Each structure stands twice: as structure tokens, then as C-alpha cells.
Length: 96
Image 1 (tube, one colour):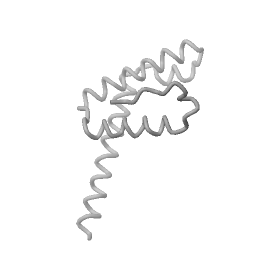
Image 2: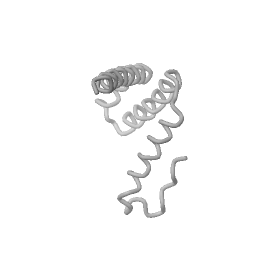
Image 3: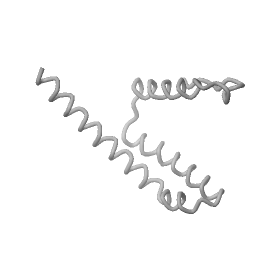
């Protein structure tokens, strides 16, 4: 469960560290499927695109023009990085 920000969270320098730790812990304990990941990141990218458009940030809005494509690219890169990490970890473990 992501902790609620304290009333003075802007003055609490550790709040965002605790929040990030909680998000990462939750992700490790409850990993999403590829489809769930794409759906979640598409929603985040859509909100970011809408926010960029609302404030007139044409460059950012253009980069997020196709939120689903952005999400698929991010998930593809994450899966590729995970495979590389596992391969390196396995090679290191078997070399010992």
C-alpha cells in the first residue's frame, strides 16, 4: 500500500524515498503481466500527454503522441534489460 503523504510532505525530504521504496516493493511482490504493464504505462503516458498539451508543451506532447506505442516500447526495453540481467547473473553465478 502506497503511504499517504503527510500534511507537510513538501518539507519531508524522506517522503519520496519512502514512496519509491514502497512502489518498488509492491512491484516485486505483485508483478504485473505484460498486458497489465502496457495498460498501466499507456494510462500514465496518456495523462502525461494531456498535461503537456494543457500547458502548451508541444515537444513533450509530440513524443507522447501514441501513448500505447510508448508503453509497448518501455515494456519491451524493460523485458530486454531483465533478460540481459538474468543472463549476466547466471554467468556470474556459474563462474563461481
